Image 1: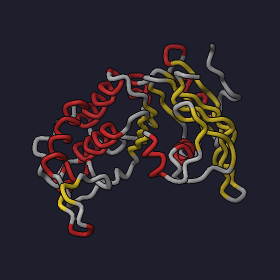
Image 2 (image 1 turned 120 degrees about the horizontal axis):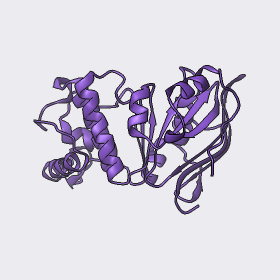
Image 3 (image 1 turned 30 degrees about the vertical axis):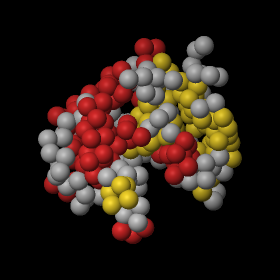
Length: 255
């Protein structure tokens, strides 16, 4: 189990009488990029919210980095090495790029309580290094997020994630609201993460993107995992069949 970064066993989430996630068994290995696909309401985001402890699971077990975990909340998951880019990005519009990268993790020169002095020089240098590492191109780091394009905002969020994720990156529809050029930039960043050996879970509806970027595709339908397929062993029509229910039953990944 040493090369398994994340494992879930019978992961389940109920909202009252609604079974949003049921019996999800999932594994992610070191350096692997896996796509999670499915129609709206299939359980994809619910699955991620249980892993990152944004919500507490109804039942099931989660192992991360070789240990069974029960994160109390998203801060605990983040401190363990899981970073997530959610669709809302969680950026501060009136702050510049370094301030957003270190949002909630600011470096201080002098800790004087509410009057602490930030180490802006350190944060700027660390931001520049992070952008080089992830191949993110931001022309002016002093610009506030408010004055950036959608693609630049997304790249800032991804750079922040990649900077602090020590063990796992999760991206939830990272290009859903972007144009063609901005989408290409984000996809190139994902390729850079792959080249760096960083494991990633990608939630996406974009079939072309998924087949271009990942090693394996996991399909959710009505709260259950119905397919777990290597990219080279399937195609778009096959995936659509699982998403729509034309193909049913769990498809186990061949050993």
